[in-house]
Image 1 (cartoon, rainbow, N blue to C red):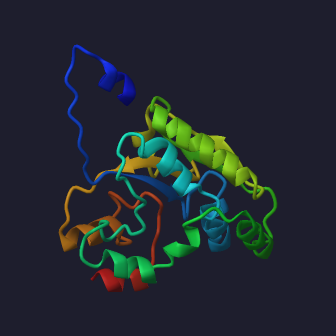
Image 2: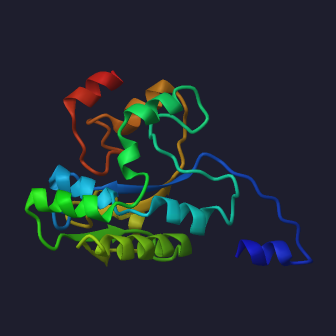
Image 3: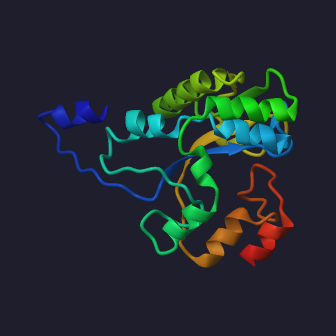
Length: 205
């Protein structure tokens, strides 16, 4: 669509970028299959999400300088981002690791894990992302199914509705308090995945 707009002769196209990024939320609790209650299965699934492929095929054609975001607390380029990325364990998920994912599933004793992903069924980028994730995850033994809906926003956090949610997130504030408001265990308005960790709460506080 972007290429078609740029090539049109009767319109002027102005482009830019903001802090929005593509996000994949896993349900720690109340998922459709409850497969992600097990941390080993969560780690296995994240190892087969083709982040770089999604970036290069679906985002870079629209924004050449786009990059992966490996911290939900700091924005790329901001003070503290590089230090956070070095320490937060995101390196383990930088590249697709099918063998590593299979080993984690074996340790978990889980066979044929099923993951239903919620996304906007009318959004071409989400549809394409879902397809890339589905294909990559299958290599490690995951069966990824479609829980998409035009009403996806209303379903976020709904118990039993999905196992993972795929959508774009645009931070509304860069304030320190904004991080706690988004990721604290009691942040019911934005903590759709039912994540709860007293140690993380203490760090945020």
